[in-house]
Length: 153
Image (cartoon, rainbow, N blue to C red; front, top):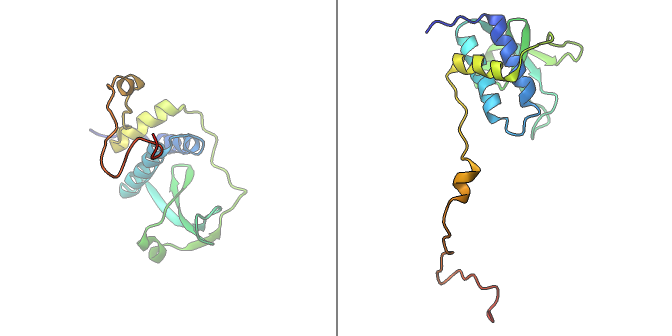
C-alpha cells in the first residue's frame, strides 16, 4: 500500500502524539508509535538525525544524551543507539528558545496516521465485565500457607 501522507502531516501527527504522551496515564503505546514512526521515517530518508543533545532531565546518571531528529518542520528527541555516539556530532545543551510550530490535530487522527504508517495497534484491555464474571475459587492450601491469621484460629 503506497503511503499518501506528506512528511509534514506525519511530523504533525508525531508531534501531537508526543505532546499527549507526556501527560497520558498510559503512555506506552503513544511513545511506541512515536519511536516506530520516527525510525521508519529515518529509514525512508524522510527524516534525518541532526546530532546529540544533553537531556534536560537525566534518569539515573548525571548526564544523558538524546538524538535530535528533524522531520518536516518539527524537531524531536529519541534515545540514542550505540552507533549514534560515533556518527553524530554532539551539540551540547538544548536550546530553550526554540519551539516547534503550533499544531492543530486531534489525537485520534494522529494515532490513525501513525498506526497506518507503522502498523502498530493498541493492545485491547479486558473489560471489567469479564473480570467480575469469574466464579469463586478458594485459596490454595498447602503446608506452608494457611489462610488462618494465627495459630489459635
